[in-house]
Amino acid sequence: MVHWQGSYPLALTLIVGLVGLRLALGMVQTVVPTAVIDFWVVLSIAILLWQIVGTMRAADRFLGVTGSVSGLCFAYFMMLVTAVLTFMQTADALSSRSAPPVYNMLTRTLPVISRDGIMRVDGNLDWELFGAFEHTLESYPNIQSIRLGSTGGYVFVARAMAQKILERNLDTHIATHCYSACAVAFLAGDRRTMAESAEIGFHQYKLEAGKQPVVINVADELERDRQFFARRGLTDEFVQQVFTAAHSDLWIPNSDQLIAAGVISN
Image (cartoon, rainbow, N blue to C red):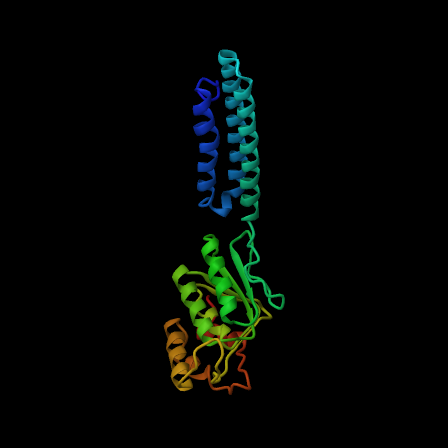
């Protein structure tokens, strides 16, 4: 109320009530949940109006007491600076409602966040994609589910994704297809769902170098993921069958098999 009436000294009004408060609001904005960002924008603009009115009254009072036009001009300049800062904060807040293009390879689909907390991850599972996936998770704490669409990639990348999914207790969903290493990431989901026409496919791993470490023993890596699948609640019969298809082939279980094996959540 004192600020609104312009009763504070002009210097205190500018430093604390105008610039200081606006910078503090910018810091608070970094932790505002995406779900309430629209409310935050309205509140921020309302606070700006309160700041401007109080500062104008303090400036007029300062002019009446001191007769200093330069002080008045400086106060109005600082109000302009604060208004610009508020505009920048508002633009940043509104842009946070959707994910930035953190994966900038033109041949890949960017991880995209919808307003209901679903991240879409499409494309080959490589370390560049994982970097984008990890960055997006850290930037958007409201993510609740991962929608996967991939023909596979590096199993070590899929395991790293699975670990992040487990840590956050995220759900997973397949809208189209999820083959090979993608299945490892999918099965990390707390609740696992698939579209009616979607497919999940399994086959043996292939010894391959590149950006992932060289697999020393493919059989050991297959067994490691069998154990992971078992821990995720899959039946023993299904676990023993997941890697029977050769790497050049693909086993795509039908919906009845997936439900019976516990691949899809009830």
